[in-house]
Image (tube, rainbow, N blue to C red; front, side, top):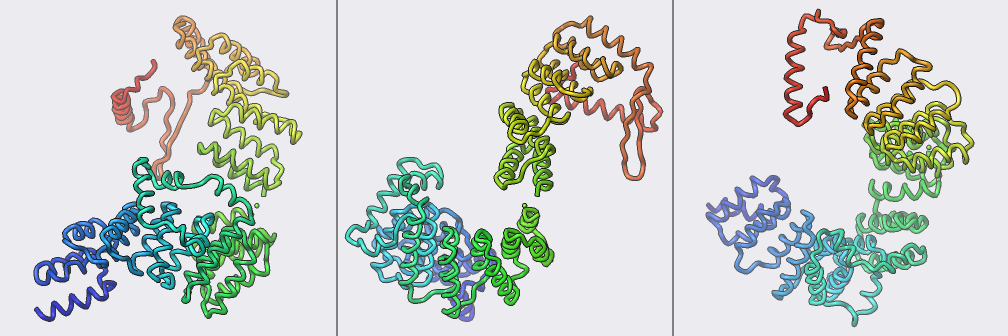
Length: 560
């Protein structure tokens, strides 16, 4: 029994040795059975494994939780993204007169940051100073992260305006106020706490500099700094486009005998790419190779952007090829590097063809912003997107822009897209006039979408006009007469529909029967209209009948 007790004590002192939930529960069972005095210590084990339900169940059984028990629950809430519950737990702990230690504040600051509870975060910072924990490296890093992400609440107020600091009771009233307002999401909570005028001020570069100076002051008060401390400040500078300051921090990092890691490099490379500083990019590239970061996807993508922005596409490609495994980020960076009209147009058409019309239109506008002059094919792509999405006004705008701004003469494909767009949207007369105005030869492919729309909108008169137009150059077009017959049928003109069908049957006798085929494995199966010679004909018909029966059960009845 004594050796079991010794083993449990050792494991509780170093809970990182417990790797799985099942191991934690086994230890918990042994403690409950033999050593109940250690029960509360299991909380730290559950917390490190992020086992929130188990942590809460155990915590609720404790008659008087210790600071370590509170710490474990607060941390577990934050680690599982239950940030509001983490802060409520912290306030409840303080209400019971229990003072937090250095293990509590990082989790509370993380929760405040994610919820964007600005005033609460300031009050927590004040509490950190009051209990003398501002020198703790983990708490300091959490404060750095908080102010970098907020960037509009000055840390100087906490340092220099201590008489006006908000106490925890005021913080609790903020939480209580927000709860009474029934905030439905963390995003809403953050929105309710924000000041629009302050957000507008952040668009001013000078204002951003002031806020980053506040972050720097937090950084300078930390007697001990690690890589995370420097990375947090570097990321803040990079996100605010403060290029020189970010580079200066990397140098200071080296002076402090700390080596930049992959996160450092990936944070600063986007700014290097924006400033097109190829020499700094090469310096980072060399450092990455020396320290084994050349296979990191984020760093490689950043270097790809740097070289591409500096018009060094071949170097960009070599970096890309050095990756043993290429993920979505690296592929996208390489595609972007190859910044030309053909690839832009291909992406726009790809989005349009697969139903992502808004993405296609966004890409087209972005291409224009990149000073790439769209050609005829690019306009076909964006008009196709508008057609598939039924965006009439946008389609007309692009069509007019093509003619007036870019002086591109519309081709058949442009008219076909516009005719299809107008037809799908019910503007049948406009589509008819547009097709009639087309220069050159008109094929059935441009008329048939309009004819199909006539059937949908039961416009018999226009359908007859369209068939007359088609018959001028393709009198044997079966599809046109089928659509006309269906249009007659849709308005109850059954005799006219039968006449068209009768005429159509005579035309079909003069034509070769239609044929379709499918390849299954190494064998091709052909099916000809009216042919019953296939070896599995009966099975095919039975399967079709089953499918038709299932379709009817779903409420879809064939229009016969």
